[in-house]
Amino acid sequence: MTKTRSTLVALGLVMLLMLLLVPAATAASGRTAVDGTWSWVTDLWEQKDLPSGGATIYGEETGTWEGGFSGTSFDTFKAVYQPIGELGFFVGTLWVNFDGEVNGVSGEMLMRVNFADRGDGFMDGHWSIVKGWDGLEGVSGQGTWIIWYGENEAVYSGVVKMK
Image 1 (cartoon, one colour):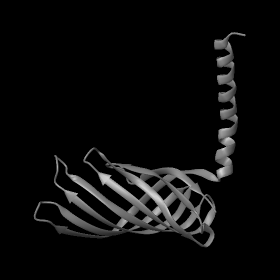
Image 2 (image 1 turned 90 degrees about the vertical axis):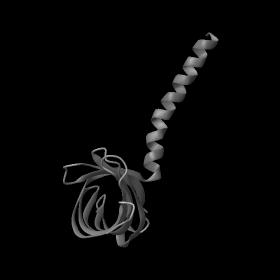
Image 3 (image 1 turned 45 degrees about the vertical axis):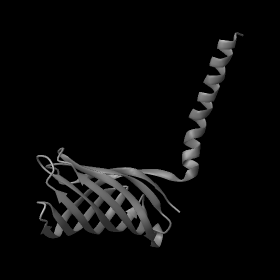
Image 4 (image 1 turned 30 degrees about the horizontal axis):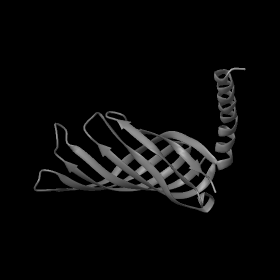
């Protein structure tokens, strides 16, 4: 067997082992994918205009979650708007007090959601689980979400690990 052929066979075996072992390692880590939708109704919107033409905003909302996260939430957020470009720039942090199920396990959890709206036709960000209680004690996870202008709900996806 030539040196090139031996190298190709060895690489093929390594790739085959990776294809067999990576799914097993992911399953062994306990991580599972979550995805679904998140919609909300704004209950409070307090805006303080700034001399720069921007604004700070505080708000509260009631959320509804479907999919890997199934339940309701009480959300609070703080954001800053700056009149940069044609539509401006909006960035903030939202705290989600969730009550429901994660992959079928009931409990409560706190999530932190960062968001930005750059005037590109959508708002998006990242979410991470801060802490869980009851059946969700020890849950961890993170992911992304996006909402397109004119839509009534955001789409989220990510991974969670149950205790």
